[in-house]
Image: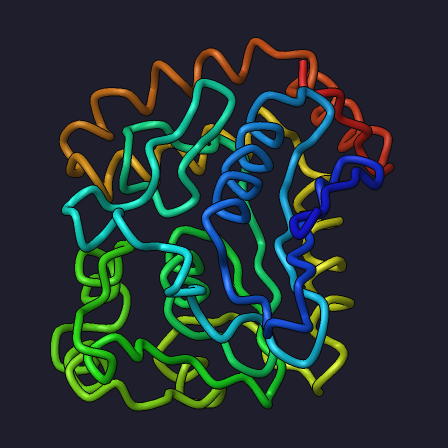
Length: 260
């Protein structure tokens, strides 16, 4: 398998492991990633996902020779199956309800850059080079960057990199808010795990509801989000975790949440 998953406590680790090919993504890898996202969403014990890659580079991009008959035929990514969630959030309305943290290093090109835009917290080694190289190969980004990057870093900043195909340094990505933490090369996974443990120790229902509210506001507008927020807050406040949170405050101890 080129995409490996394993669960440590409440963290689902999603490992990209094809370093001999610079983690270039094949169609099979795409489906493996889609199944990993589905597993994260469906597993009641998994509270947060962590995506990372083996080797000196996160990815050099797509394995273009394996993608004939998809983009050139106007189909986009392969249609996902029932046990899959498109990690680019382009082929269906399904979304992973759990937060996802991403740790990157070296090259983070094309699909790596675009998938990152759907993650919630990003950690990059200082040697990371982000790039949308498509315009230098004769096509253009089609995995979500045209939809999402302007919202993240602004119109002009987006076009400066998207229309030139130039690399963006890790320092620039941090300055623009694309990544939340920079680390020394080789320490990015360690920092991402630290953050994942922090998320996993929080109340799962509250975390998922906060993420849902942010997404609704971003995708459907603030008025839609406001119409839902107090109903969702009321449901969360009925949970066992809410009672545990209050009791732990009274007893001056760390809360132990169960996602109930």
